[in-house]
Image (cartoon, rainbow, N blue to C red; front, side, top):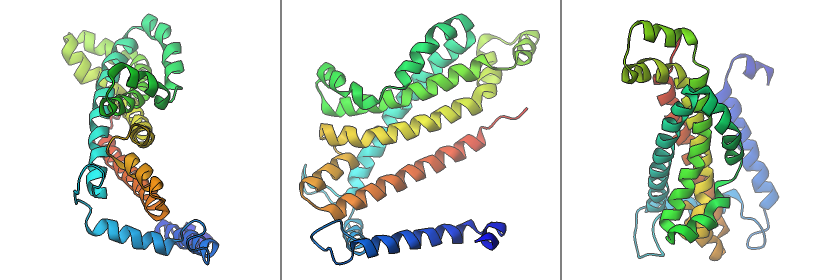
Length: 260
């Protein structure tokens, strides 16, 4: 173990952990076919069947897992995009005015702590459409972390940057895009990564409870069919998609990272 860590052979170590986990899973579920949780082999068989034809469409209640994944990702992009856009606009406004920032910050902290799922009954009652409600849940999940980080990042920009922009007589537009946003960029992107994680976590229960097409719908539908192998496959798929999304956002963050 020490040798592997010294050599930074993290990949071998990580694969070793995976083998131990799958082996323990197999041993704990062996001999309980049809009576308990399915083991890795039945789950792998189900995964193969679902992935062989992921984009089939046999009607409203029978769509391939690829189509349902695209529904969830599309809903995530729309809700996250809208939430982040609103959060950055208001975050900059709050961050540039210390009095407003101090006044609204307690409310941001309170609202940030509320699960977006808790808003779902009120949203559903208001808009009376399950698809729009699921989208608004993602919007709510995306809003607060980015808003809080943007306000904090903008309010803590070095005063020297602002003073230099005034000396250079930059207009408000140039000051925003050439000084304020680049200086607060790392903090804003950190908030966006938290927002993306919150939105992806919220999207599954929202789709499951509202019956909107997506991976959450797939999980709940397979549970109703008592297909635990499909449920476990969907859980693993949700985790993998979340990792891919985070990697993409991390790549974007590195490209726009700002250094003194």
